Image (tube, one colour):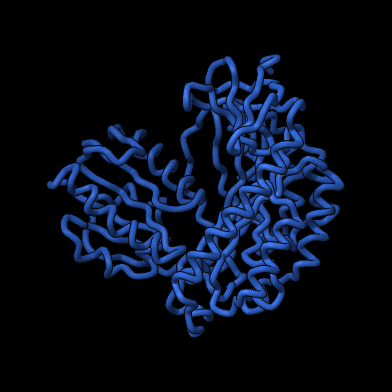
Length: 416
C-alpha cells in the first residue's frame, strides 16, 4: 500500500509528519511526502487562519482527483478546531486532532472521529528519519500567550516542554549526519518553564553539536544577555532571529495582548546586534487588525524601517471565532489588502537594504538544489544564495558579488 503524508501547516507539523513517515517506512509501507496518487492520505492540517483551514478542506478534493478510491485520514489543528468540517467529506475514514499523532500509524484502520483531550505533558513518541541537509527538532508544544487574535492555544493546549536530555540526544545524533538543525516548537521561548529548565540552559547543553543550529520563532521577551552568550558559545550557531512583532504600534500591540512595547522590542534587537552585528532580524506582521487605524499603520511602517528587518512575513488579519479579538468590528477588506501591499513593499525595501551590506563579504552557504540554473543555498543568516558552482548538500565559503531581487549571487571560494 502506498501512503502519502501531506503537511498543510507549520514546522512543528513538518516534524510530526517526518516522524510518521519514518514509522511507516519501518513498517514496510511505500510512503511519500508529496501529494501524488496513493492508496491512503494522511493530512496534517492547519488552523492559524481561515485560509489555512480552507486549504485543509480543499486538500481532500485534491486527493480524490488523484485517486477517487483512496482512504483519507485527517489530523492536526484544523480538525481539533472543528472535526465536523472533515468528518462528512467523501472517503474520509478517520479524524483525530492534535493529540496522539505519534500513535496514528498504529490506528490507520480505525474509523470515525476521535478528538482526545489535549495532553498536559509533552508527547515524545516521534523519531523522525535522519536527513543529510536540514533537520527539524521539536522541543516544545502548546502556548500560554493567548494573543487576542490567535486560535492556536485552544487547539494545541498549554505550553509543555520535552525533556532536555531527549532534545540533546536527538541533536547530537542528527549532527553526525545532517548539516543544519532547526529548533522548533509552537512557542520555543517558553521552553523549560514546566520542567524547571529554560531555552538558555538547553542551548548551553548543545555545545557538542557539530552542525549548524538555527532557532525557530522567538518571543522578544526571551532575549537577554544570558541567552545570547549561550548562543555565541555554540560552534555553528546561525544568527537569524525570527522575533515575532505583529504590529509596530503600541496601542495595537496592547489590544493584541502582546506583552511588550515597540521600545522594548527595539532594545532587544539592538542587544542581538551587540552580539551578532550582521544578524538577520526577521518577523511576522499582521495588517488590518480591527483596532488598527491609518495612523497606527503608518507608525508600523516607520518602525519596520527603524528596525531594518531582513525579511517580513506579511499577513492580512484573519478573524478566528472564539478568540478575544473576534468581538471587534472588522476593517473593510480593501483597506486590509491595501495595507498588506504597502507593508510588503516596505519589507522588500528593508530586505534589499539588509542584503546590500553583504556585497564583497564571505558567507557560509549550505547548498540544496538547482533553481533558475543556479545551485541554490542559504547562508547562516538565511540569505538566499545562488552559487556559481558546486553540488547539493555541501557547505561552501562564498563571496557575494551582487544582489538581485532578494537573492545574493555568490562566487564559491572553498568547500568547508
